Amino acid sequence: MLSEIKHKQQNHNLHDLPYRMTIIDVNTLFIVIILIGFIISAVLTVVGRGTDTSLLFWAAGFFINSLGFVLLALRGSVPDVLSVVLANTLIVASYAFFAQGLQMFLKEQFSKLLIWAPVLVIALGFPLLAQELETRILLIGLVNTVQCLLLLMLLVQNNKRLVGRGKYILMVAFGIGIPAALSRPMAIAFGITDIISLNSPGLIQGFTFISITLINIAIALGLVLMQKEQAEAATESMARSDELTGLPNRRCIYEHINETIITCNKNRVYGALLLIDLDNFKIVNDRYGHALGDELLRQASLRIQSCMAGNEVPARLGGDEFVVLLTALTTDLDSSIKMALEKADALRLKLEQEYVLESAKEQKIRHISSGSIGVAILEPGRQNRESLLREADQAMYRVKNASKSGSMKSNSPVSNVNLLTQAD
Image: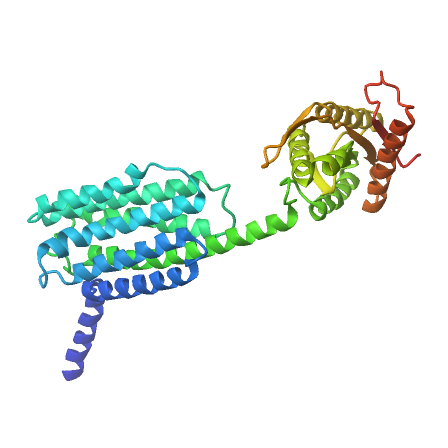
């Protein structure tokens, strides 16, 4: 008989288990949210101090979010103006700080009114709803939803500018924030549950505050990872870019040439390398100084970039030498040669237009500086990057020598362009 009673008691306990699992102490969740928020705030402050102002905005967001939950946890022990109005205003303001920090990180201009208007809505609306718990829950749920949508929209709009996985963690966090913010308002609106007080136990309450805990952790992880990945990408970009012109540097173009050789061999298609040497550059440096010389290089790089199409890669080798890699022309040699020479002539015409150079010292001169261009055809079967560069260099010096000797035909459309192929 005793064993039967124990068996029934065990079965009763098992049947009650799903119900008891939904009875989560909300006050305990408040403590977890508060501690996590303060820890994240401290870490972000240490990481961002003196390096990244946007991280400090996020740190401030987590800090005031935790303060808001401290006041919520003190509901009944402190005046309602603190535990109701100020607490919810701080929680909404924390997401405004997140949006402001994300905007600064992205260097994206966004309406400050749209960012901070939800804070005003809560600060002005909650005093009028002091005795209306359900209405307050509906209002703050909708406001939090709008804030999560705003943050999600900022991330989606700038998806291509952001690298790595951190952005996706943030997108998921704010995406989950939307149903978390709507869970209590929807439950009230459809009569699924009654929330008689802030810390009422129940499945909806538990889901909401557990979601907030997980979302805060995900936001912190996503933010730190995104910041780290962007910093690494910027460092890598600097290592592969020319500091003066912003073009790919020697290291980067060498990698592109190696990749193009593999592609041309695989697809049996021709490419070309154009080596450009600016004429009369030394005159500017010697006569007017390096500031105007640098300005000439910057303007020349912009002109080269303006001539580029989708499968063409410009770069600066160093000094006054630039290259343009045509990664894919045609499968026919004659057609490829024609296209390469046409591109070289278009570059020549662009580069020989008059330059107006002005330095920080208010020097301003007009200068003519054409470009001598050597062309080397990248034929399928080539195995060597160095030989391609050497051929382009030899072709370019033919132009230089011909120009000095005055043997160029002035009426030739490619008079200072020279072609050198493996057959030469």
